[in-house]
Image (cartoon, rainbow, N blue to C red):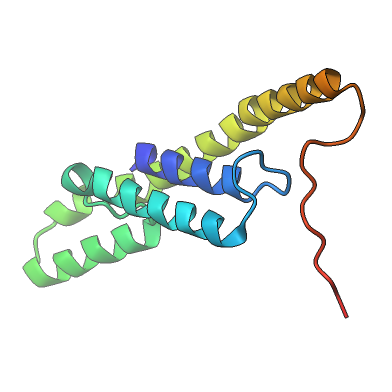
Amino acid sequence: EAVGSFFFIMIFLINTETNSRFFHEPGFRFLVIASAYAVAVELTRKLAGGSINPAYGLCVNITMFMDTGKGEELKWIWLYILLPFAGSFLALIFHEFIFKKTQEGMEELDKSSRGNDEPSYTPPQVATE
């Protein structure tokens, strides 16, 4: 759960950056984010049930408990609550303190190689009426 959440949230944060160096088309960003979610769910399906979403994992375990009446499903319920948040938090920390710093460093290298202060990519302006 934590690894799947880390993977998905990291891809989400990278693709929703306003000045991302990777993809500039919103439609393609959507495709990448949706694909990342599908991959994260599939990778965690066999080991943890592939919920990635704490609400989904909680509801599945409560429903199974109501069906069977055994407490075995509730024994591990804390994992479905804690681990997705832990993976998301680690992705946020990684994104803010490592990924963004490397992006800033790459931007500075681009500026020095071009010899000007123009950004390498400026997002298109949306016309407002």
